[in-house]
Length: 378
Image: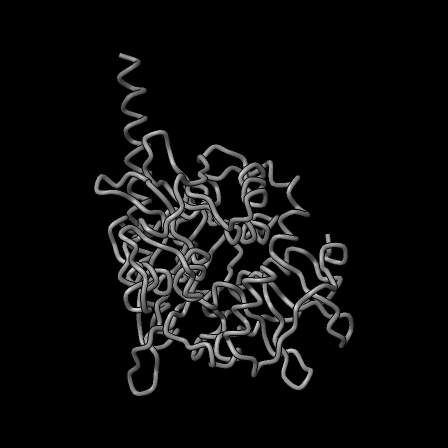
């Protein structure tokens, strides 16, 4: 399937020198999935709502400061390739070209809606993110913003003192309340300047009750609920209200890129941070780890890079997260280093240790099963 019937010629275009105050008002008024940014009439990037979650950036700042350079796609491009472009560009919209002419845009929602009927073969458990970042309901909004930025995520399940799910805080909530200086009252009628708003407790902003899904629900039903409620993710929860994972539209887009031939597919988010390491070296490193444990079949690998502000001799501190989807579940590794090369290899070492641990657990389970069978024969 290509995107010729999925893309739309309707989009909002802004100049790279436009004030962020104007950009925020466009999101307020039009609620677009993203904006196309141009300079001298030429496409230079896109802006999504998540890009505005930068509480210290003033309204007079130029739009070019927060835009992303989402790769352009052809109007007849395969939907799987476009899904990969959106995930690796960490964006929900991409410019669509017909030849050398900017024709329109394609959005993540449009793709998911088009492939909805084919998602009934997947369950939430197969593609959910299991390593979930949560936040306490009494934590401050400023801390929540830092956590969203640090982990490059769009939502935080909110838990009480007993780790029970009580709400969810999203980037949309932050944009509405903090960045846009929304006229919303918290408990105790606390309003004021930005610093004071950042000091509000999370329970003032969180959405409750939370829309959730279960591990055994089909991805089709889960995505339909996201689209119907215009949200980007669901918390995966069990009957005891504990947080078991998160399923986002990005997880579903990533699943669309899984190899149909049963070979490992490697996907990289924030490829622009690759400096002294190439995509081929990353694939080779993960393949080397996977090949050591043939009984563990790796279907898909996701590598995400995140740049911190700290630098050493001009080289930024890079966090790397690797997640493998295997026939025995998900396993991952995280590491930090100066430069993408260093960060990746630290994460790769952690990944191998975790794979060894998972292999040991699988072996223990097999041994217990054999022992129980033998005892049953006595």
